[in-house]
Image 1 (cartoon, rainbow, N blue to C red):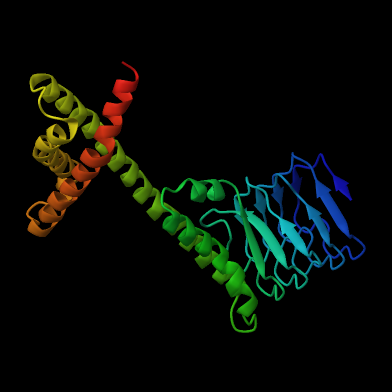
Image 2 (cartoon, helix red, strand yellow; image 1 turned 180 degrees about the vertical axis):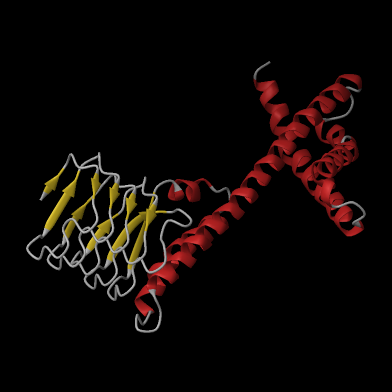
Length: 275
């Protein structure tokens, strides 16, 4: 059944329409009301690419096997797909609070959840492979857990809800780590450019020293400046923490060595190549 121009499906509009096997909505659809297709036990194919809200028991006890929920979906209310025992796979966006309690209760064959949207691009953009692998494993964990659940003991909805929140929390954590690493990289680059200018100035002042020895004479100053910058960026929440200050000093020395040994020579060579 085509319902391409429909905006809202009212309460119990197609309740217990046993002969209904397929329904397709267009881009105007916003809401599927409470029990709209409840007990349509022959309904196997549901296409609703723009729905925003799926109401209480909207598709309860239907025969749908796979479900593609759209990126713009805002909420799936309780028991919306309750008792859909043929349902095996659901694709959905990652949104906290979108899936309400019992939305998939009694879906005994549901074993796979596929996330859609920007989460996969986000994971691919993470700087460290370890972070990417951890996020991928967390995203896929639900597809390892669902087949092991005894629906007589545990509502799969709760497992899905907890997993979605865990993925969201992990993404927020690695987003913060990623930005911190980018900020640190910008600090390194900024100080490397500054250090290269020191090397160049000292080379002009003392033509007898080579680049390596001049860079070495600049290391102490670079370490001090890098450590000081790290202190300025992070000191707000760590006043009086001697151990933290020591770690920052060691971190500054380590980063300064990276700059001196790798970045400054590269910048100097690049400069010479363009002269």
